[in-house]
Length: 92
Image (tube, rainbow, N blue to C red; front, side, top):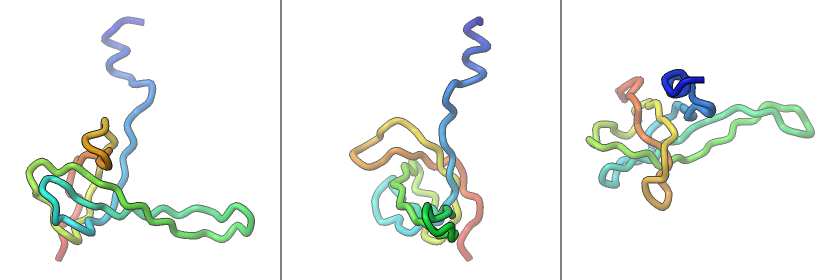
């Protein structure tokens, strides 16, 4: 396998999540709530789990209520492990 084909296909692609911005008070940082639906291990009922992700927003362009797509990245600070990739929908 050559180096060029190895660069095109990553072994472990970065995770991508979609969520709603719940806080933009910090400089260059957003807090994004990501909901996931999982089946309860014992009872089988579908339950919603919410996870708060700290996201790096270089230009401070996203605002509270926006739906954003975030991508996993290297650790940027104590809590930030995600980077803003795009704003899917602006808040009304």
